[in-house]
Length: 44
Image (cartoon, rainbow, N blue to C red; front, side, top):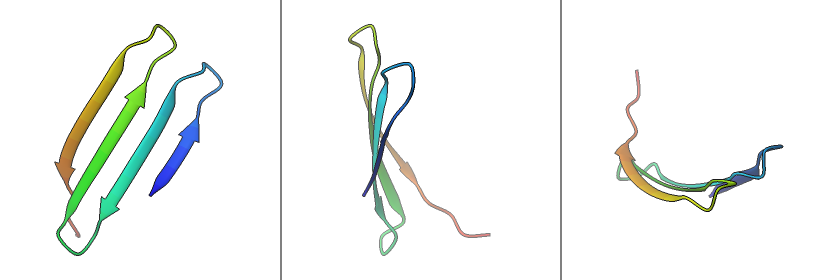
């Protein structure tokens, strides 16, 4: 898991499942917006 807060006040959290090639991400924005995302991790 990786998490950080931006100067703008937005926060981001990633949970990286390298074994299954999936990333889960959550973001909060300064205006109160909340986003939940899921994607794939690919090696090149």
